[in-house]
Amino acid sequence: MAIPDSWEWCRWGELSQSIQYGYNAPAKQAGRIKMVRISDIQDNKVLWDSVPYCDIDESDIDTYLLQANDILFARTGGTVGKSYLVKDVPEDAIYAGYLIRTRYSNSLCSEYLKFFMESELYWTQLRNGTIATAQPNCNGKTLSNMIVPVPPLSEQHRIVAKIEELLPFIERYGKAEEHLTALNTTFPEALKKSILQEAVQGKLVPQNPDDEPASVLLERIRAEKQALIKAGKIKKDKHESVIVTRDKIPYEIPDSWEWCKLSDLAILENGDRSSKYPVEADYVESGIPFFGAKDIDGEMMSFQNVRFISQQKYDELGNGKLVDGDIICLLRGSVGKTAKFEANEQFDTGFICAQMLIIRLLDKSLFGYISSYFKSPDYTNYVESKVTGTAVRQMPAKEMGNLLIPLPPLNEQHRIVSKIEEIMPYINTITK
Image 1 (cartoon, rainbow, N blue to C red):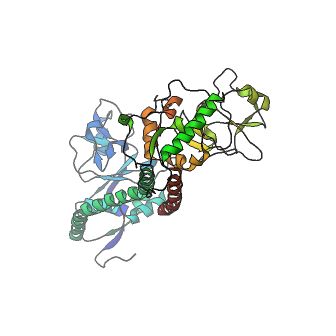
Image 2: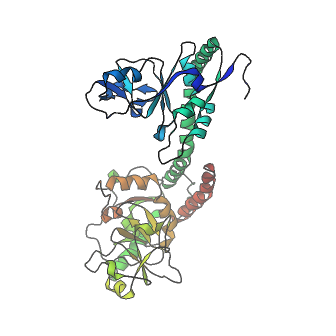
Image 3: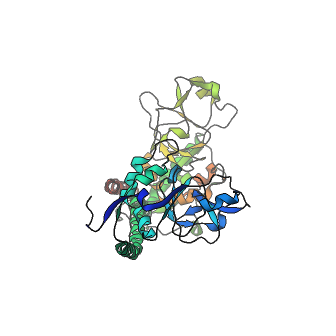
């Protein structure tokens, strides 16, 4: 590249009084003198309080002694090429073997040389001279052969002054760019959550006074549940209450909506936890799918890598048998994660592991809205509030039954789901 006529191209070795490798010695809590290592240099500063000591022969100290305006250069590891200008040395110190020290005459501006070591020209030459190994390294010969554009000394100082004047603006720009990048990354997901929250609060689509109110829908579902209980097909929960008291309501919803519990809308069934629960010997090459957490693929249960149990083992088991349209919820690990089981020509049923819960909606037409609710911040916050354990996160099945759900009229549910399906593809384009 071209440089002004008053400048000169020089090699680094021509500019340096010395290019000296550091001293190799074990770091100690106490010793003859402090020894600066690569790890002691952070954010262009030496963390002097944490710099260790080492033992060194008195006659060798002068060779490795640091002075103001020395430039240290990392010659190996993940920080290879990183440099540090020694502004001051509060106490006698040497430098460790993975560093190279370069020293210059007073006719050169050390700050200008340090800024050169931040430039693309410097890094391009460094990359070309770096030895690519498991532990990348660069030697003193590579540093010595680097070409440097050298202005007159007075211009070096003017360049340094101008860069130091501009640096605060560059730093502010960098922080603004980082903030914008983070915003671009998080904004689409935040927007999705905001829309879903608006949806479950009755703010996404307008209410229609001609819609059958949710209270009528809820009564039909409860009547169906009572009929199933009376027929002996499901058991009544002695502790279940259909009343949602006002003190439990987290926010106001439209008049045509109703607050209810998930247990009002669905049959909840744990996986079999008896002594008949499948063990390794029960798995077969083909048979009935036995789903675990790994088989949740987005919003659906996946058959791709599922394990199988025999028909005989399946018949022996109790709770946990799937029917088409069931929602499966994880109660351990990724707590609250849900997916739908869809039967196909090959598999009309399946079985869930003990860490899962079946949510079988009493009215399948609720599926779209309930699935959307399971993606809302409302649901996520509820699950997080009920999770127990630190090493292994888990949630009791009964807490899912107690989940409060704002239930819209059925027609409005369909409008909400349609609007969500209309909006989400546009949001997804933001990330592309």
